[in-house]
Amino acid sequence: MLLSQGMKTGKLVLLSFVSVIAFSSMAMAAENFRAYVQQRNEINSQDDLSVIQAYHRKFTLAPYVVVDKKQKLATYFGEQGQTLASADIRTYSGDELERGGSGIYTYAGTRNSLHYLKAEKDQSLHTVFQGSMQIPAGTRVYVLPETDAHHFRIRNHQLTFNAARVLRNRPDFNYSPANYEVRKSTFRVDFTDAFTNNYVLTLQREKPTLMKLLKLENDEYNMLAEFAFGVLAPETEYGQNFKYRLKQTAPVIVSLLKGNGLDTSANSRGPTQIKRIPDVVVEHYKIEKHQLKRPHNAAIATLAFAAEQIKELRNLAHYHEPISEETLQDYLYYLYNGRRGEIRKGTATPDRNIAIRKIREAITHLTIEE
Image (cartoon, rainbow, N blue to C red; front, side, top):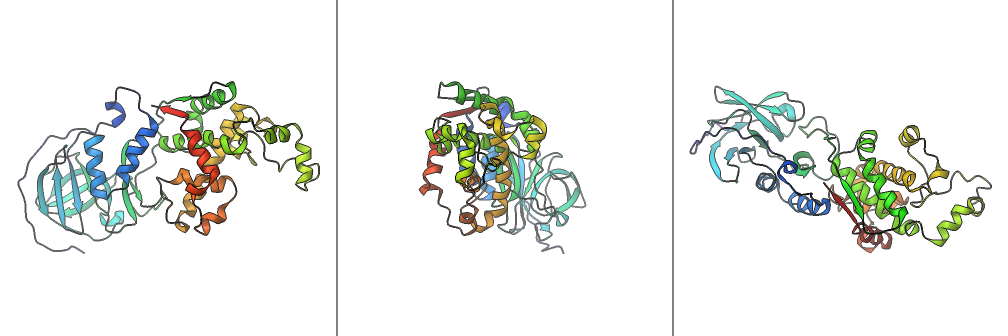
């Protein structure tokens, strides 16, 4: 149902469309992933309009339009965020895509003051608002959500729109599609021993293959790679722990102590103490548990196992308010270590967890540059 008929048009300025230029193509020098994540998360913690404006100031060069359905206002911004025009509008209510709801669109044209936009999700055409405003074809248009269930955020160096807490598929909304573009990365570690360097080099070399096998986006892969390295610290002290070495040389004793007889299949193996190798890794790499002592195999299996856990963590996030897309890494160890109950009960406190503090400290020794 169309809303109020009132319309007030400000100064109209026609500008030729400037194509979106990704931050990655603007930066000449290699970018530190941690520095990027810190900047990205600071921006993502802000309100939707601020996120949009910060993205255009820092990561792209193009004018854009913001549609506020609650205020019944469309605003045309220049590439530096200056207001070029504004107009009162009529629009449909609701965040759903079929109602011209919240999300990212590309301007397609106008007829009889009806403005048509192409949804980012599937390029479908929608009548989103009615009003008197001149907008160049191809301009990005952002429709702000009417509820707090959805959020604009920077992800993979792009502005995206998705669920507010953590990314989950909601087919009725104009959520940004997954972006599986691989950014070439260089992984370096402060340590000089062959084991950790081979482990980290594997995470770098296998990135394109693992992203494809596990259906991971670039930011997510790098975050999981950090975790896969960091978890070496609390589990076996980078493979140097005496207890771990004893378990590796006498797995039958471990099985007997656990009451499993001579069956060692349930034993945790490798420097990251993996209990189960994901099927997709077994099928593609032909890795078996007794081979996890090798850094190449351990790195692949650990990242894949963590990728499975991150999906479950997103499904459990509603139990624990502090879990958001930007804090997932801090809570991943609870699932990795089989302590899902603390997530479900809402008692997980990463800052007080000694193992998680060790993971955080270990990650400071890893550098990812793109």
